[in-house]
Image (cartoon, rainbow, N blue to C red):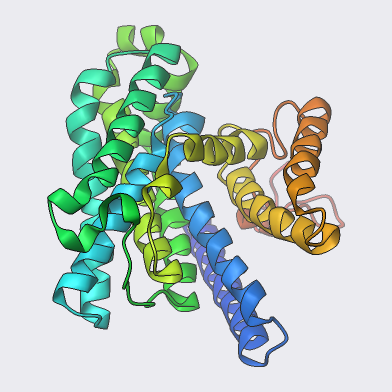
Length: 337
């Protein structure tokens, strides 16, 4: 009973905190305190975080070294943009487009996962890298499939339908889904695969099934993020989804700490804002040095914190609500040692 009450209290407190954060950010934008430019950067940071959470499930929690994440991001972007261009720029079509983009990315992930998830470590990375190259070539020639896709010239005329509420609540949904998975029996099975796949297999865990689960779900999250990205910048080019872009998301997951959703969120938001802050600080004349400064910051962080910013630590309201009182007893556990 006590445990159930504490879980309910934590859920209510979490919901209140998330809603309060949304209201604060919405007011900052509405009142003009946060400029339109920085508002768009915030949207991009949330979209990037949504995509990175997907890779965190694949690599951070299941240990599957994937270098094709940008390809699934691009699949979601192109499918969602095609839906709104072909069938009209309505809110319903936008929602259907996002679902279609996430579903398309998940379906492709499932189909290619059947053969390549039998591979491990570097071999899996090379296979997903090759898939990313294939998707990039397909995007370059997509106009042969439909003129709406644009091909190597890029896809134009996408309606700007992505707004802050869509981006914020999509990120919250993805984080909640990932958190619930990680703390479930399925999530523990995925972690056992990461720690020692052979031992997990011997213990009777269907490793292929759980690798497929994490891979498909993580790629669906990337597809959702891609759909939001397409309707935020209203222009897509195949170069935006080349295999090198997969390293940006991989860097966020490693920088935040493998096996930490909190770390992925912090790193995802921080990396995007750091890049734009450097643009402001360095100015237009020294803009080319932004990449150098950014890389130096990452090198220093990796030297000082090789386990990532958060390591395996997760933020938990339950931990805060259960902190010991002044009398030395934890709240809600009177009489316990």
